Length: 126
Image 1 (tube, rainbow, N blue to C red):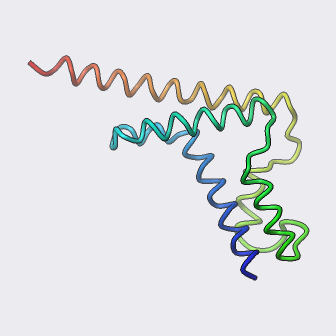
Image 2: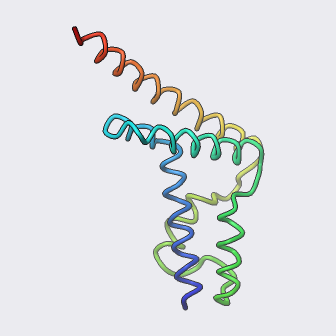
């Protein structure tokens, strides 16, 4: 039971990491210091996706699932809703490269908005 719960926690953290890597730059509008962990996370996510690497959270989750005696992701809210988002069916190498580029492009757009806001704020000061 505990291994199953831990595996669910790992999947949730994995999902939140993905969301943060893709759109976490928006948090910079509220908290400037987020820029540092966000750039690292976005870079890591883009590299893992584009290079076809396996995120360390995936083997950890699989280990916990096996320790819980589970083979698949059937049952429960987390398995039913989050896992298809994180591990979509039919994911090809080409799609992974496009997703990696997408992470970079989205973040370039976000950081462009952040820089423009900063420059406007700076130029408004006497």
